[in-house]
Image 1 (cartoon, rainbow, N blue to C red):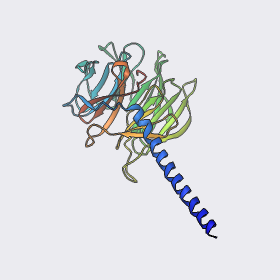
Image 2 (image 1 turned 45 degrees about the vertical axis):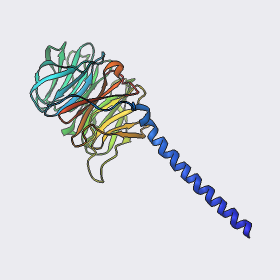
Image 3 (image 1 turned 135 degrees about the vertical axis):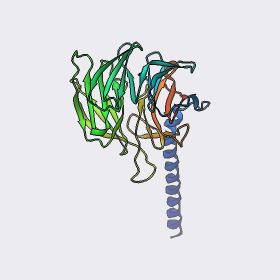
Image 4 (image 1 turned 30 degrees about the vertical axis):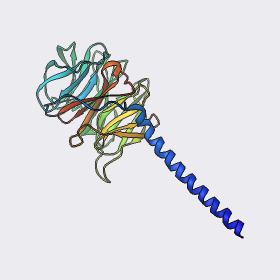
Length: 304
């Protein structure tokens, strides 16, 4: 009887310590992905300030960074590798999304002007499509443009190779479609929801339609029934996904599992847009209120 009691106690303690070990391993596994991307010797560095509301982060293929002051009428800003800031192109108002396409063509979301325009060589501004209220956009390597229209719960597609640009609705139903991004190989499109916590993934077909719609990753929220404020998106060279939110920049591994949350430089102000840029695309730039910050990372972006 005594031997049976000791055996049960031993089994209990073995099970207890195994449980503790599994919990510890789980915690380490949850923290490890974030430690793999953040450089331990790097902190947020303020690059620009004094704007009303920074938005529309993007990069060119040389690692120069671009952003807009969405709250004011003024030119887009260009940030060189050394951190110097200069104006780029004509004055624009209400810019919420930027993305380079082929060559030096910079595509621009101008929701208040109800159009998507293109700035060529930093000088000539042309309208691509109009009578829309675009929020954010991406351009694939073969010149296909996708953009979100939050007010109508739609995602649109435009083939930029066509002489006559045709708007095609490729998705409806996301509560507040906002940020939009692409995987490195252009095979998957992902869209953040500013209201709900889901990040939606789609497969891009050969005819540029979107299929296999699925809630692939879930943003953490501050409290039940509060909005996620999912917004700007980007991806690194190893297909980890970064999405700005109410809690900061949430990073997901390629399977959609949360790797961690990178706190924004100024938690009292919204962080709404991000982009990997700089030398070797190793800096993560963020639009945080009226300022732009950057942080050196262990990983690189994909250069768009």
